[in-house]
Amino acid sequence: MTIDTPPKSLLRRILRGIFTVPLALWIFLEEWVWDEMLAFMSWLGKLPPIHWLETQLAKLPPYAAVIAFIIPAAILLPFKLAAFWLIAHGHGVYGLWVFIIAKVIGTAFLARIFSLTKPALLTIGWFNRAYLAIIGWKERLYAYVRALPAYQRIRELARALKIAVKDWWRAKFGGA
Image (cartoon, rainbow, N blue to C red; front, side, top):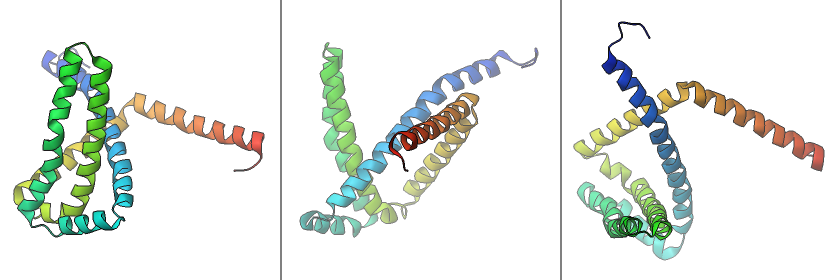
């Protein structure tokens, strides 16, 4: 930083650093839950009645697909609001559990419905533009976080720990 750097730029960089890492962690967690729930829901989709329902969802026209995509979020919104009400009224643990359960269930349904209706959804101009904008923003956020020295150091430590655990396992139990 030079002496002639405007304070607004410095403040923006500080705020960006403060908010970017927690936001990136939230997105990483959300994607992990999304991927795990999608795998579970895909397995569940092999059951005959669920398979039939999923086949019908995949056939939906674009705007019906939007409605199907919104329904799980709308159904779970009251549970999330109840979770915040519980937290606000001194029942933090219960509220947190209600929120987490609603979030996981909602993510599971959204992930599966999105995977089934994505082709139809992406034919809608505004949805496609929003999707591409969100994906672009997410990729820029990830690139920013991956470039942070703290992130790179944590990755190095994680790799070293993984190697150490594998070496310990081989030494202790003999094998891969």
